[in-house]
Image (cartoon, rainbow, N blue to C red; front, top):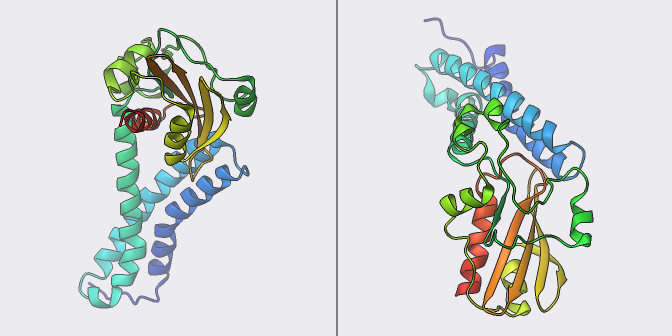
Length: 255
């Protein structure tokens, strides 16, 4: 096989293509976080479509570089890092996220008590905005999710209350009236910015570091029980984040 020098455009193009996927995903995440890009185009197009295909093409380009440099890896390993290792890692990440999305229910909220559903105050409803998911008393997974991902057919038409009971056992009622200061401490320990506090109710918002994803939390304290509800503002599926937050807060309040 004819040796191709590392100064060849093939190496430079492969390296540039290899780092393009993480750069696009980072730009989408940060742009959405600061409001320059909407959440849907940032996730749906820039990340899951453009970022995915750039990772695929980058990995293919990296394989070409590996074939061209197989006899001189000591000199070409830096090119392999940029042209193969980085895009292949991105590709594995995409595959993992898509597999996780298929395995989890397409919901965006978790509550510990659906017999008396918690709602948000006017302050928090205003903060959520008109484009956020509506907060209803008995949400149901839309049958339209099947058209988006066939793997979600098992969840279509099912009440979120049933899905929570089946998939999030950690989200349960705390069998005592928790003082508001303990609730505030538990929420703040989980990165929730508390917006309202009373003797019987605490509300707040947790914002992720990327994509500007926000989830709102309300906690209701009553004699003999303390319940909470966590609702994402945007995104069709929360990837288990609302369940995780609810379960961690319950664990803190139960300790």
